[in-house]
Length: 348
Image 1: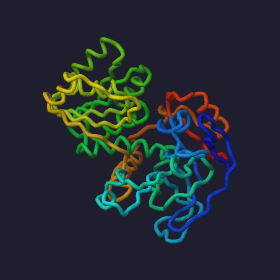
Image 2: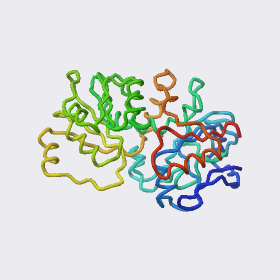
Image 3: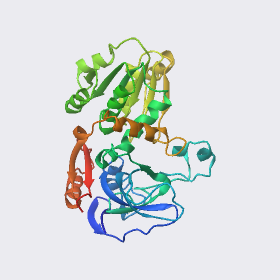
Image 4: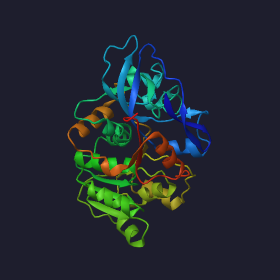
């Protein structure tokens, strides 16, 4: 079968590999769409893969074509979105439903073969069955959407709150839509890319702020929103945006740290003092799972998509055949694309 393999650092190519064989408690999925995640870029360009060659892809949807022994709740023909985390199910964290914190986990698309292939073997518990109202293309966005839903649920929702989203890449733009759908009083989007801010406005943001300008920074530090508690979602994964969240947060605000940093965060004692003086609540959000696995994040994602409350067309850089996918990703040279690059296997 065809796959997109990272042969070595910075070497991505279409490769023929053996089709996986079904095992007990697993299924074989014919992949429909697989998205490029920002976390894939270090694995492709910066020696970040666990091993070579590797087939990445953890944001994917597809159709079950074969069922293994012990699988009772799925059948051939079912369409699924993949929940890529494979928790051990036996450790203390798993027993408490904290699957994202499992120290013994595996992961489809980084530790074992992922969805950047025509077919992939998936544990049955990792298959989130799709309803007819959700397209396979939209289902490829379930994983990034649930990444934004996880901290919202950890913060007891966003109903009646003023939500500020710092960084409006794919996860941030999905968070804009989710916050609006889930009852936020207002949604403010902050970024340094004006085109992303325009997308955020088209997706329901009440206010947009370009923090690359002095005027924008002044606005960010004096966000004029309705009365109510404030929830900030940091999705950019940059030391400066973490400090920006602390700086612009109002007293008693909650800050959810979602983005992964790739540089050290340092701050002055005055910057740290703001956390104390404003009595801020900061927490980290890692992945997107809860009990029962894969969790209410995934059920909520299905509900939002089924009701037409999440739109993805404006988030997509393009739909690419295998050869065109390799070409498009290779030209990034490790930089983030302007939208979601989707590998389209539906025509293969």
